[in-house]
Image 1 (tube, rainbow, N blue to C red):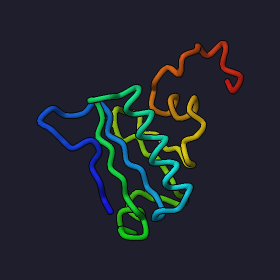
Image 2 (cartoon, one colour):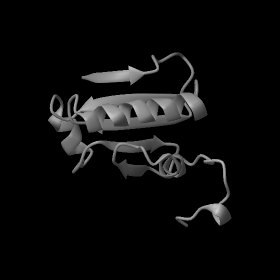
Image 3 (cartoon, rainbow, N blue to C red):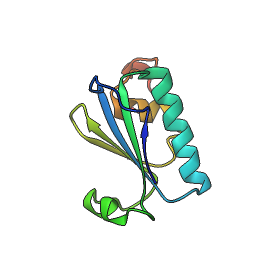
Length: 111
């Protein structure tokens, strides 16, 4: 299962994302749903998301050095970043993507 989301068009995307999942497990499905929500809200029309099931394509997971799933890799823009988990921590996922989660670092309790 390797899906392109949204379908590719002629214009190159601003964000290239890869989400590695393990089949249709609840955690994997939650990660897909959370990431698609984030992308549609913050990156609509500006991203390419590839979902890779590591059970069906273990060689891709090995090449990408995936050790846990779900794992999101922000391929571009640079720097490349990794986030393991179901992406339910939206502020953390937005920081990984380089997006403003709606508050400055001075108000962020995790910084």
